[in-house]
Image (cartoon, rainbow, N blue to C red; front, side):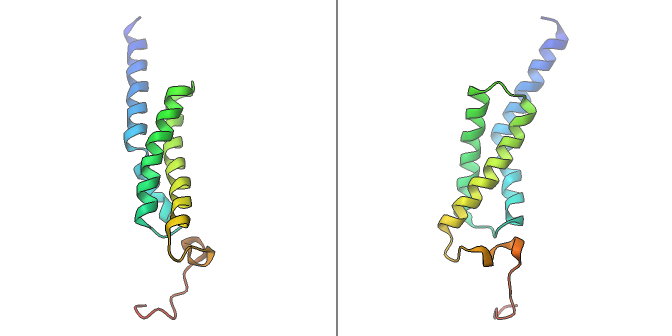
Length: 108
């Protein structure tokens, strides 16, 4: 194996590690664009992102560049669903994408 092939393998392993460890955190930052930040939804999203990314890396033959997308997307989707399940005021009217009416809010 020549040095170019070894560098390619090293870059793939680096991208896999970055997706596995850090892939859920951009999803945490992007998910509040759709819904308010709820702590249980964020934690569940990050942990699920690690598991889903590991499963994709272990059981599929996909490009290392796809693993980052899988990590962010799984964090956003699972975190959103967990937020809907855990939130006290879950519903479409409280989503950030639909806007929150704060006219009757005492603070705002």
